[in-house]
Length: 421
Image 1 (spheres, rainbow, N blue to C red):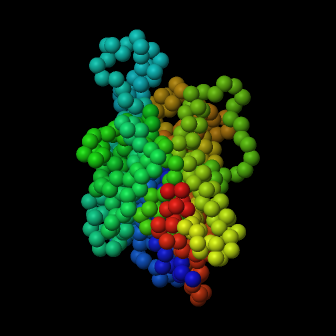
Image 2: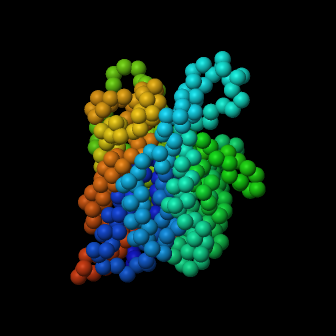
Image 3: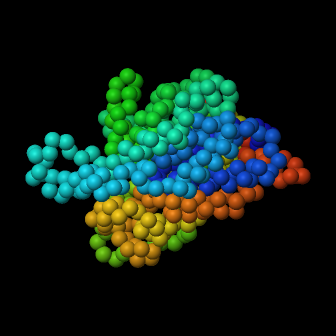
C-alpha cells in the first residue's frame, strides 16, 4: 500500500472574488494542523498548485514562495485580513462614475448616446489597482527556479477566451507534460505572469478583459471560471495523485431551500445567481463525477478493476459550512459609499436578514470585516476535520503511527481519464 505522505498532492483553489478569503483561512488551519502533527512529507505539501479567478491569485502567491510555504500563507493572511476595496478596484467617486455609472447608462440608453462617446466603458468597475497588489503578492519571477530546485512541480491558472471561445489553462511545470485538449478547452504551456492573473480574475461585466498572447496571437481573456467544465482536471494532468480542493460555497452549506424576496428579482439577484453558477456549480459537478467513479470502481472485483484504465482518485474537499451570501449581508455597509450607491442602482440594499442582492455583493466585498469573518470560518471548518486532514496527508498526532492512505494510488495517465479530464 502506498504511503499517504509519499503521494503527490495537488491543491485546487476555485474562483469567487472576495469569497477567496475563505481559502486563506483553510490554508492557515492546514499549516497549524501540520505543525501539531508528526509528518515526514516535503516542505511544500502542495507541489502541484492550480487556481482560477481569485483562486489563481492565491495559487500564484503560494507558488512564488513555495520554498517557504508557511511564510507564503502568513503573507496571504496578512493581506486578506487587512483588505480594502480600493486595493482591488477604484472605489472613489470619480473612479466609480467613470466606469460604473457610465456602464449602467450605456446599458439603459446607450443606443441614444453611443455615437457621442468615442470610448465605450468596458466594465462596471476599474480594477487597475489590482495590478500593483498582485506585483506585491505573487513573486512569479521565482517560479521557474523553484521548479528547477524541486520546491514546486507545477503551477496552473485558467482563463476563458472571448476571442476564440475556448477555456484555457496556462501552466508551467517540471519536465514534459503531455498536451491535453478537450472540446472547447485546452492547455497552453507558458511563463505565467501578471496578465494571466488579471485575465483569470476578470469577473465578467464587473472587471475588464485582458489581452494575453496565446500561441503568438493576442486574445481577449476573462475570468477562468467561465466554461470551466472540470476544475480538478489541470491538477491531475500535471501529476497530482490526490487532490485537495478548497471551494467557495454551496457544497457544505446548511441544507434546505432558501427564499430571497417574493417579488420580481432585481438585477442584483439575477447577477448574483449568474455569478454563483459561474463560480460554484462546475466544481460540484466535477466532485460528484469523481465520487460516482470511485463508487463504481469499489463494486468491481479486484481482477476487473486491475484491467480497467480507471483508478480511484482521493479528493478532500473543504467548503464553507455557512452561506457566504448571509455573511456578506451583514457587511454591506463596509463597502465604500460610492460602490454602495452604484450597487443600489441594480438592487443591492438593506442589511442582515433584510438585505437584497447580497449574493452579488459577496464577490465584491474586498473589505477586512468581511474577509476576516470568511477566514475565521475557513479555519473553523478545517480544524473541525482535523482527523480527516491528517489521514489525507498521512500526518499523525505525536506518538501515533503514520496514517494509511484510504484509496489506492492512481497512475497519472489513468487519473486523467477518471477525472473526466
